[in-house]
Image 1 (cartoon, rainbow, N blue to C red):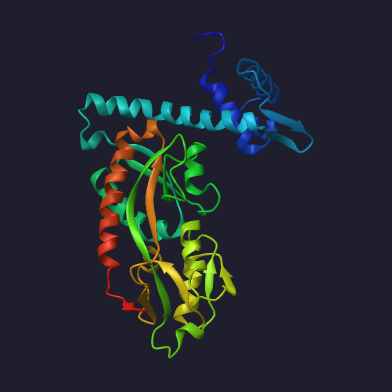
Image 2 (cartoon, helix red, strand yellow):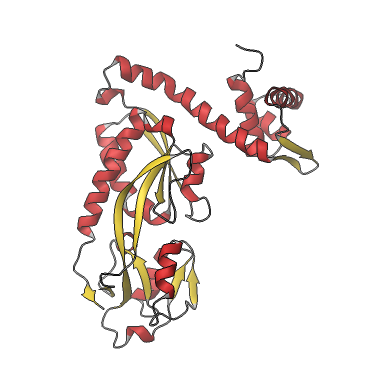
Length: 308
């Protein structure tokens, strides 16, 4: 190993310090002494040529260099974990039995509820050796793509498109293009008179621009944490909303769905991963099942809406 190369144990230590925000916490998590952790971090900083953590009474906070280094460390450690499985898969000809191992997935709520379960059911049936680990992440800010970029997830189910492109350094693709619709209580004599309810994750700037051009849509007076609460308010007759198709999966008969016409906005739901993970058998297997599940969801959500 070259003098300035980092060893796996050094990477694990800086990840542990970042995760626990302290040298003592990292030591406890790794079964090391605090002095060993401190010595290792100092050596890593010397090799990299940058300070990775700000030390203080409050603990150890990653610097900008530290955030970058830790994200790369997580991704390198993940590749080391998959090395043996991928080597066995190559020796076995890439057969179904060889597709195994942990698979870390980040998904926003409606995708985790209505898209991911079907994909995981098929994935586990075909590849029982795969061990999915799912984290539900709010699709705000860096969202699920940020989890992938930071090495916390192998695959993210994300909203992607012209106003929310796949971040630099990652790869991805669209799984389903879903339309937005006007959602209101079934049988209400004047649904446009109801308050408009919205939630923070609802849409991108593209949809917001469409929203701003609609004179008939008032300002949202009610905001909730997720689309499930929106649907509950609409179902109970308290509000109207504009929602994407995936969020309307399994909507009760008390909810009416009205088509917004040819100029309606759409939302692209897709996957993002790293270039190195995109080549692994386990991630390719998940993407195949996500595509199949997305196609099924598009068919099941195609109940004929009313027209505005």
